[in-house]
Picture 1: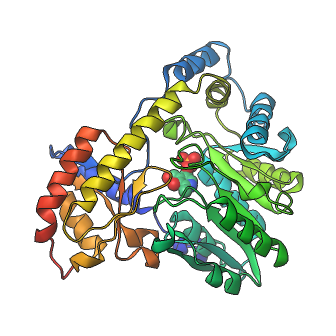
Picture 2 (picture 1 turned 45 degrees about the vertical axis):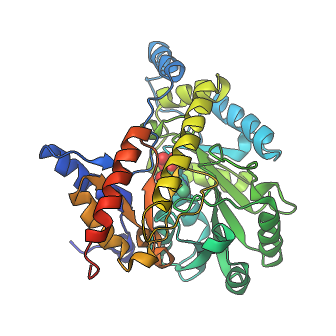
Length: 390
Ligand SMILES: Cc1ncc(COP(=O)(O)O)c(C=O)c1O
């Protein structure tokens, strides 16, 4: 078979690659502490699981549901977004998909022509550059600056914006834990309007923010018309495996995304959609409890990393990732990641997230305090033994 140029240019997400290697080691009987994959280690809250059981009994299993998502879910998402983001969206502005990832792919396919330019954070979520390459676009990573709490380098952004068809933002960020505050978002919004650029705002960590409040670029003047906001239930409600995400944006775009999903997945599993309504309308206490635990783990891991010779880690302001600078060790992220996996700790090299991630490693703290402490102990002991040639 002869593969297309697009499929040949797709890249895997490093976290899934290391997870598969770690699982293979576990199958051989070895113990691995998982700090590679970005999924909450908590069970899905009991009231959401109960909602799913009720939905099974109420025959939400039977048929295809509308490709844009069931109306009660779209209504409740529009209400939630009006309250949390202050943007006047209705159900006609919402599309539901099996996770945030398929929404990102659909948006890229809907808005980006081959040969045009897509901008995204570097380091950033790997799907962004992979999807830009898939559609034959010119992907340009905009460096995040560690000393500015991993905010965009706005000078580079301004220089690259002319001729761009899509600017992808992510806040709070994977992998850095950085957060784009109100002021910087305002400046980016002003530039996006001036250069007439559409924006995909990936906000899947919007509820995991430790200092200050979450702001969406969609709420800035002139942005509602040019922004598609992407969020989902995976991270906030420990529902990664349930596959429910959504996009919010101009109705004309949402209708096109519905058409795309109609040709692709047809619809999202009805039981998962019913459970999503329970998650959003029901008690937020379990999510708050998970958030408090993430906050405690954040201190534990950042203090522990800063206590290791050669590592320096800024305090993440959101999400559940630590992104320590390893440049003082003289070793590559890949060499550290490979060595640590052999020692039973799975973590990721920073350049899995783009060239500007070289000189960093990413550790997900979606794991227990006990496991994080053990992993830090192993890292402290093993880091000097990592080969510097790798
Ligand atoms: C920045 C970012 N966007 C999107 C996703 C995908 O989320 P979902 O599980 O809703 O597809 C992830 C998952 O790791 C992520 O980190």
